Amino acid sequence: MKNSKIDSELDIVDARFAHSLPRPNLYVQKLGNRTPSHESGWTIELIDNRVFERECFETSVRSENPSLDVVSYATVEDWDSGSRPDPNNSAIIFNIGNAHAADPRLRDDLRALVEMANPTPVLVLAVSEDLSDMLEALDAGVRGYIPTSVGVAVMIGATRLALLGGVFLPARSVLSMRESLKEARNDCDSVSDMFTTRQAAVADALRRGKANKTIAYELNMCESTVKVHIRTIMKKTRARNRTEAAYKLHQLFPSDAE
Image 1: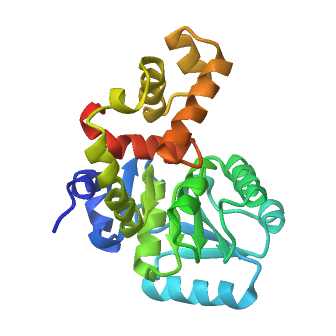
Image 2: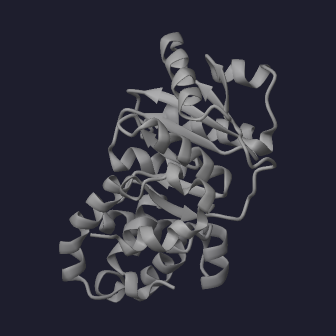
């Protein structure tokens, strides 16, 4: 059975590269219209402190797509100090292995890497398939979360998607959350059933990705008040961060979204 959300958003992927993104394996979101400088190939920059993993990664990618180049680094420091490819035609994959993106120290490292790498997109490769880890990674600014359970073709497709201005998440993880939200959706027909009028206004702005300062200005309230409302919204939606709260609001109240 097709998923309309996935089908409707796949149009952001260049048709020439759609074969790399099997529909059952992805959930995508459009961020912009960024276009790589070359069409035939691009560079994947891998950061992984394990030599064997780096060598296997390089061999697998080149076997799957010989037009791609792979440059690997053991640490972020090596990446930062080394000779780097064209930042507008490369994507960084940070292999965190068994670590969890929800870990505060790792999340801070991801934020720092995203800032340092700009405009090059950063994606995370990880063992964990916990949606909370994925959303924490996205909250840190990464442009994709790739579980090690997916194939090489999907991983390459995810990097291409990031280069085109999209975000990659494995569909099965997102769809599993949709199932868990069905019961909550049945209990709440609209935002007003769950929140007060002011909380609903903040929730609507949060769902649209607006910053606290913007929300405070538009709703004529103090930024500290906005933060209080957001904490309440996160508690009521059982979200661990703003990104997860925004996603849950979209899923709980699709008819209220633009």
